[in-house]
Structures are given as structure tokens and as C-alpha cells.
Amino acid sequence: MSRRLRKSKYKWATDFEFKIVDGGLPEPLCMACIELNTGKKLLIWRDELLSMKEPPFPCGDDTLVLAYYASAEMGCFLALGWDFPVHLVDLYAEFRNLTNGLTPPSGSGLPGAMVHFGLDCEGAIAKDAMRKLILSKDEFSADEQRRILEYCMSDAVACGQLYNKMCDGLAEHSLLRGEYMKAAATVERNGIPIDVESYRTLVSRWAGIKTDLVGDIDRNFGVYEGTTFKVKRFTDWCRRNHIVWPILASGYPRPDDDTFRAMAALHPSLWPLRELRATLSQFRTFKLPVGGDDRNRCLLSVFSSVTGRNQPSSSKFIFGQSVWVRSLIQAPPGCAVGYIDWEQQEFGVAAALSGDVAMQRAYLSGDPYIGFAILASAAPVGATKQSHPVIRERFKVATLAVQYCMTEQGLAESLGIPTIEARELLELHHRCFPGFWKWSDSAVDYALLNNHINTVFGWELHVTATTNLRTLRNYPMQGNGAELMRLACIYGTQRGVKICAPVHDAFLIEAPLDKIDDAILTMQAAMADASAAVLGGFRLRSEAKVFRHPARFLDPRGTLMWNTVNGLLHPSQYCKEGPGNTASPVSLFIKSI
DNA sequence: TCTATATCACCC
DNA sequence: AAACGGGTGATATAGA
Image (cartoon, chains in turn brown, orange, yellow):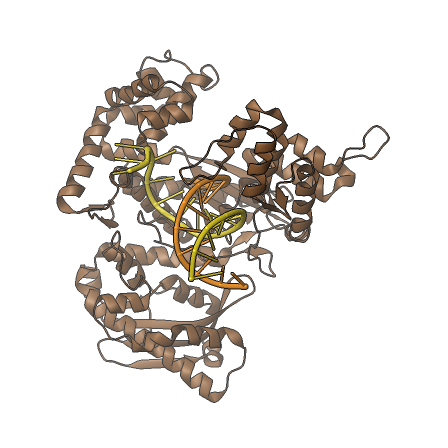
């Protein structure tokens, strides 16, 4: 155990019960705490909690606060206007780290952790029923209140028991992860500003747009029932039109877009159907939680993936949707949002941690892909993205392929080049960056010999017989990339930047119009400092974009779709009726993509 | 009508 | 056995 953990005089295990109201904000219902040295217990109901200006025990330097999934507890601290505790350990993060790569038989929740350590968790059995009761109403009878408080205390006690089982394994890094839980709670509370008017219009027209799209195109095919694509009808259509469709091992026609594209190239009459399917796939269900304050909030699901990344629900988090949906992000009046992403984060991580000097030079040259191409003598010194776009693309894809451990066949496929040329590209990578490969091989060897692999700050993956070797290869880049993101999130929030969302290698931030430029600089410094801390002094660059109200978020990959969606929502503005133009908005829309 | 499975699309 | 890492979620089909 680390010195700082040991010297904590008080250890308070805490748990809150709360309701999630209005698009994702927690509303505390009660709090239970137990001090582990003395056994002193505190149990506080809503009315009293709301009147408290600070936590019921001092949260200073000599106190360690414990919780299970602490972003919830810290969210309640924020809701109550309390300062965060100085020292926090989240036993969820620690349990995830302890069992990462294994599958705890009862999951990674509090009951699962209790089972793992052979602790009695009878109290946990009623969890679903209690959550249901808590969410079902606003006022509780005396008996219900008693049961909720009892349940809350049982979780705090469980948290304390868990601490006693886990404390020997805790380290300085546990406190770092605790810091991240505070930052995550702050970010979850901030949320993402949404143009709610456009959002509501979109939601209300959603089903109608889909129906119109299908109706307009499927007239000529008859392969849909409602808005559902029917394989049987499609195979019949193919037979009638003498088209032999590629099939899967299961005997079903290959339904993916690549196949549709290829087949449409052979049979041009198929194009509208391909366009329809591609469009519908970008119109999946749409249920972002947006509060009355026009902000999208959801759980970030921190430490959820094996590499330690956040993994928020893609349906509840606007950055999990198709990129065009991001145009619903709009800073409120008088404010701006900034989107800051690390440039070639994983390449930079690999260059720094492997110590490969050529790779570091390629990164520092400003364009690693061109740098690689020049080093490989595939482009002349002085080549740029503009002068050698095709070469650059090849070396870019090859660079990413290396990070994902792609085979030469896979690379050939994705670049549309012969396998022998793909092999040559991969060999060039080995030749140009031998230090990287030595480091990467060593990391995998170590992991296989010792059955674990770690990031620089101790996020560990347990290696089993079934661990994918490509996962191991990729782990140092992705896992340390996640460390970068967590540390930058901590630094950013500590320095007062309003972070709305982390997006793996990027952040969305927000500030008043006159403060946004400073906020961007502060966040970029936080990101560079984080990279230096994780990468032994190597500072990664970042790139920033700013969108000032009333401008909305813009991603070039999504602008076409965004514009066409708007064309459907507001046809009068986009599609003038007239004798020479009888095409429906839907056909125009399909033609535009 | 519900669940399980396969496959795909989207994100980084 | 496949040959692209980490994910969430939607859709379509088959089977209970």
C-alpha cells in the first residue's frame, strides 16, 4: 500500500441513493457513511442532506474516502455543492483493474466484487427492487424511507468490507484513478449543449422520414415490409432479375454495404436500393437523453473496456452516433464549444514509449505518414500531403494497420492493392522503425511469460489462454492512450476548463465567447502535460476547432448528410416547387448522396 | 411474442 | 480458426 494511503487517519466508506432526473442529473435521496477504524456510522436523509453545506465528515488530507463506482457519489457531492474529498479510492476501478481480462462470475458490480472475495452479499439481492422503489416515486412512507436507508447503509458497509479485502493491493495509482472519478463526475454533470429545437424537430419527423424514404425507393423493388428489409423478398427479387448474389456461410445473401456497392456497380438498377440502405443505416433510433437545460448527459462508463477506455452507451452519448448528428451540438448564446484532439495519438505513444528515434522524428516532423513515406524513400524529402496524396494515404493506412496488427491480406483489401505491395509496405515499416518492433515484440513476450501487461500507470490486463495476440500488440498504444485521456481530463478540470465530453483522443470543451480562446490554450497545455507525464517527457501535439454560437458543431464527414436531412425537414427552403421540378424531396435527397 | 444468434454499422 | 485493436447497439431471422 502506498504511503499516502497508509497515513490516512480516517477511512470513510460512502454510498448515496439518488434519482436520475431531467436528462441525467443525479438528485441525492440519502447518504450512508461508515468510518472503518471506529465503526462510526452516519445515515442522512434527503431533507437534511440538502441543507448541508459540506460533507458530514472532514474530507481533508488525513481522510481517505471510499466508494464503489465513485462518479455517482462524486456526482452527488456536486449536486449538493460540496467540495470533492482530497483523497478518493474507487473500489470499482480497483476491482476492474484486479480482474481485467478475466471474467468475474458475478460481474463487476458491487455484488460481483463481494462474491469474488467470498463476502456475504445477501443485502445486494434486493438491489433491483430497491432501485425500482427509489425511481418509482418522489415521496416515501416512513417504512419505505427506513428500507431505503437500510439498503444504502448495507452498500456502504459492503464497500468497507471490500476495502479490507483489497487494501493491500492498492497503490499510488489507485489515488490517480480516484482523481479521474472526480473529473469524470464533473464532466458527466457538465453535459453537452444541444440545439434542442432541431433535435425535437428531427425526433418528431424521424419515423415519417424513414417511411417516405422507403416508400419512394422501394416502389421499384418491393423488398421492404414497412421500413423492414426482408431477405426473402430480396432473394426473390434477385431471382426474378437474374442476379446471383454472393452468400454468407450461413446461406444468406451478404447484406453489407461493400457487397451492395460491388453488386450495384455490376447492376446499376440496384443503386437506389444501396443508397436507401446506406441512408437508413444512418437513421437509427434516436433517443439522446437531453435535459431541460438543453444538455445531453449520460454515464461515461469509465474503465469499462479492457484497455481502460470509457465506453459510454452509443445511443445515449451524442458522440456515439453517426458524425452528422454532431451538428446538433451548439453552444448556448454567448458561448462557444471547442473540439481538441491529439494528433496521431497512438503513433506518438508508440514512438515515445518504444524509444524509436526514427519514429519520434517522423512524429515531430508534423506529418508522421509523409515522414514514414520519406524515410522509406517512397516520397522525396520535402513531400507534403498536397504533393503526394496517394502515397500519403497508403502509408497512413499502413501505419494504422500496424497498430491493429493487420495482415498483409487485410491491408491489401483495405487499400485495394495487390497483396505483394501490402507486404512491401509492412516490411518497410519494420525496416524504418526497428526500435518500435523490438519494443512491441518485447511487450508481447513479457505479457505471455508473466500473464499480464500494464500501462505506465498500472492499468493491467490479465493474459489468459484465450487472449488475442493482436489485443496484446495493440494494448500499449490503446491502454496508454486511455491513460493520456484520463490524466488530461484531470488536469483540464483542475485548471478550470469546462469539459463537456472526452472522446477517446479528443475533448469537447465549452466557454463564454470571450474566454474560449484561453480555455482552448489551457486544455491544450493540459493535454500536452498529460502526454509528457505518461510518455516520459514526449509532448504530443493537439489540434483545436472552435464553434461559436450560433454556429453548430461541424465535422466535414457529416456535413452532406446534415444538409440533406435539413432539406427533408424544411423542404420549402431547399426544394422550390415549380413546373420544371416535380421531383419529390425524397428523390432529391437520395440523388444528393 | 419473446429471446438468442448472426451480422452489420457506427464510433475512436 | 481467422487473419483489424477497443467498444455499443440495431436489425433480421429462427426457434421456443
